[in-house]
Amino acid sequence: MPFDEGDRTEPATDRRRREARKMGQVAKSQELSSILVFFGSYIVLQFFLVIGFNNWFNVWKGFFSFDSLDLNLHYHNFIMAFLLLTIPPVVGALFMALFSNILQVGFVITPQVLIPKFSNLDITKYFKRLLSFRGLVDQVLKPTIKILILAYILTSSLLEAFPEILNLSFIDVHKGFQIVIKIVTSILVKTMVVLFFFALIDYLFQRWQYEKSIRMSKQELKEEFKTTEGDPLIKARIKRLQSEMARRRMMQEVPKADVIITNPTHVAVAIFYDPEKFKAPKVVAKGMGIVAEKIIQIAKENDVPLVRNETLARALFKEVEINFEIPEKFYKAVASILATVYKKKKKVI
Image (cartoon, rainbow, N blue to C red; front, side, top):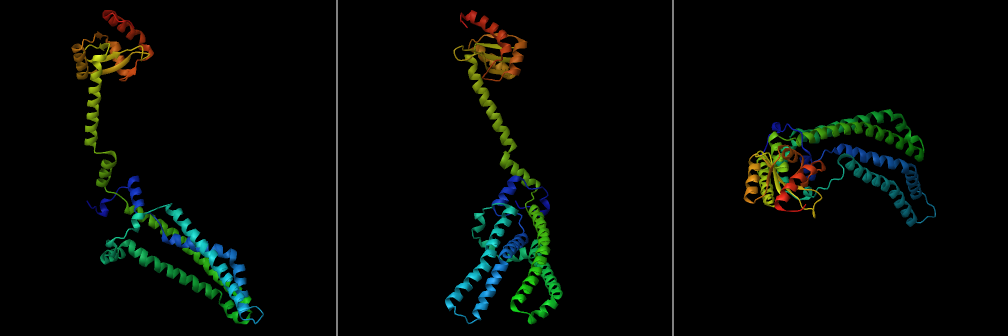
């Protein structure tokens, strides 16, 4: 049964969160992932910047100089300089992409997401998602804010560095490269700092949206409880059946008992003792009320002796579970009863 969003007022259960995670529904900010990838590439590039650009400058300088080096060597130097500039940042970006994913959601394997669904091709659903609150935020508001931020940083940085840019035509190429690198680095650092705070805000927004999307209605909580814990009516019935089966098995042990200690009709405890198997007498059946009456009835039908001892019967009923040996404090009282019973049966303990 579908529920309106207004009905979903309860926090998600652990089971609901696990199911959502299996379907790839997690709280993840793409903005935070992007800025961490950008940051990783920048950090790695800083280590190789001087070496990389010096090699790059020397390669291009070699291309325009007519020395004795052949074309193959120029080509080899060009490839090596290009790889030195590109591979480290790419590796850094891949590492940070993996790190950002683990940082936000941990390891998530969602094969269900890879299964093609024709419903995803429904153009109406696409526009519905696009025009939703989350769609407007993700597709319109965030890109607009980022463009405005980048435009402001780029404009202010270029205006600040405008005198140095004008002097580029009056200085040598190598020094010009250094000035350009300094300007670009300044723009990158400012961009990363601002976008990092923007990404943190987006992450908090995504977590809020995620928690909102997996909230449950009271009816869903009841249905999940029935699924995980079982229907209370069914559980009660199963428990009742189990009790009846246990009582039936217990009644089957009454004819084997040596004596039934009673109170006289409210409580009945069946005692069995086999010195070759047990260290002490064992309670094989017990009950109160109707159950006690049933035990006494079966005992009479099978000529099992009945001994009235109200205090001992109540104590054994309260302290000893079925199929457990009696505690040492009851040895003397029970032994006395068994001795009397065995004497009548001419049985030796």
